Length: 290
Image 1 (cartoon, rainbow, N blue to C red):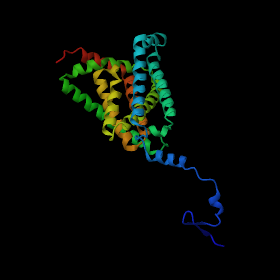
Image 2 (cartoon, rainbow, N blue to C red; image 1 turned 30 degrees about the vertical axis):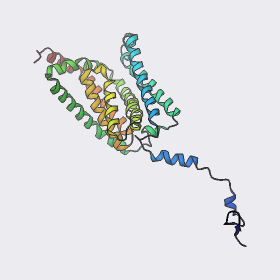
Image 3 (cartoon, rainbow, N blue to C red; image 1 turned 90 degrees about the vertical axis):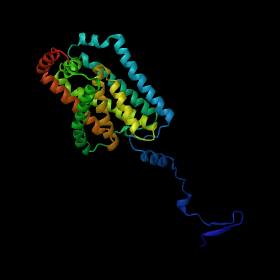
Image 4 (tube, rainbow, N blue to C red; image 1 turned 60 degrees about the vertical axis):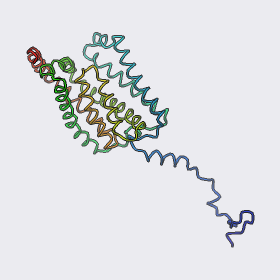
């Protein structure tokens, strides 16, 4: 049997009898192509256009600043402290986390993106080791930022302690049984918000990673204004270290582990040494500045 014949109109040879597999319905490659394109981009890269990224960043900042403004204007934190003295100071953080993660989930669904696009890829046990190793790096970065701040502002150690007294006293009052829950929750939602969602959007606006890493860290630090200028600088440097870890590992898991450990260690030490901290701060703050 001859498999080809001459088509005078097209001046080509065509199959005389088309094999059965070729008679099947054409394969739709759209999903395969879309998947290949998505997989070619790995966190923190994104398929978003610049206008989409700008809108997402604007919505995130409006939501965060709006929530903080509402808290300050309504006096809700003070009311929560009066109603629930033990857990009241922590409730605004939990509310903020729920609202933030809900907003991120809605925006990801609107953009038809999965959680893998913000760094929540499949878990690997190696992320645990990377997260633990990132903890001393974050503490070292925070210590360097404190030294540079005091040198740049020509402040004495006494003035430095006085500025940190209110914050250190506040975190020492957190019940030990709440520290684990608080640290895990805050570490999770802040990393999703800043190193996951915000970093990918800023990455879509830049050709490199330096600007997204620096800018996301600066925003992260500035939104911790309740800790004072020193606290904002220290938080920004910690965010810088975590952002570099996220870019290097292309995963959010090590950052979440490191963040939770840093908060846990700081809060536990503040709780266990609260009396000693109060005494030390009182003695140092009572000394004349200079």
